[in-house]
Image (cartoon, rainbow, N blue to C red; front, side):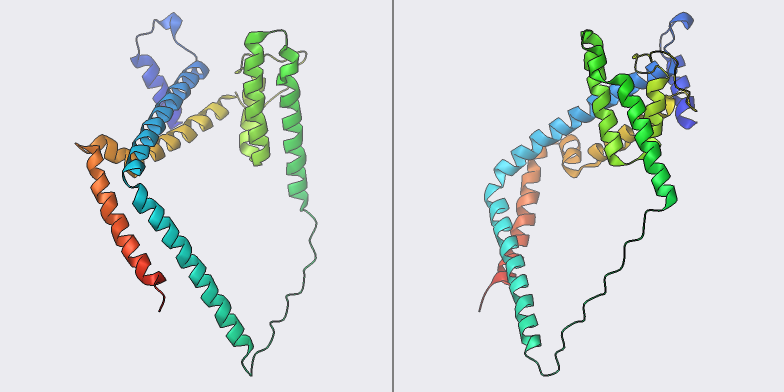
Length: 247
């Protein structure tokens, strides 16, 4: 509800004539496309900055990784040695193996859910399969994109999202209209777009809250962060050297 009110306010605030107002579906798609561009831009800038940082602390990164691996190997060796010593003790007893429990059959609810997911997936896939649009280049690319997303949602096992995407497709929101008698759905098909918008807003927040991105946009000289990194790795390497030192 909050999203719908926000969308209506934003639509009215733009310079549209009443007859030219975009539909809620169109506006959601515009917001989603804009968010994707913004997220990709942040990710690219962050990645480029992190590559610059890594180039400045290559030696520290390599030594820290080597020492971390050595520390894990030494811990594993000590654990194995203790186990051997324990077995040599007088009161040692082999642990009794756990009895295997029989697998219980899938609950009826889960079976019904699986069948429902399979039905929704097949209906949607048969409707938008790219083979149906092999002679229509504009729709072929869209069908390929939609089916790829459909497969991803089906394989994730998320029934709620699959239902929403199924409704999204069969309510004509993808511009690939159903042939023959349309399948009845219980929603307008907007739910999937709203879910996608919420997911992207979360991704945007994560991208913006990444520490290196904050450094990039908040530091007067972002490359000064190299000194902080060197100090951190210097301290960590010093501790790892002590922990891995052999007598």
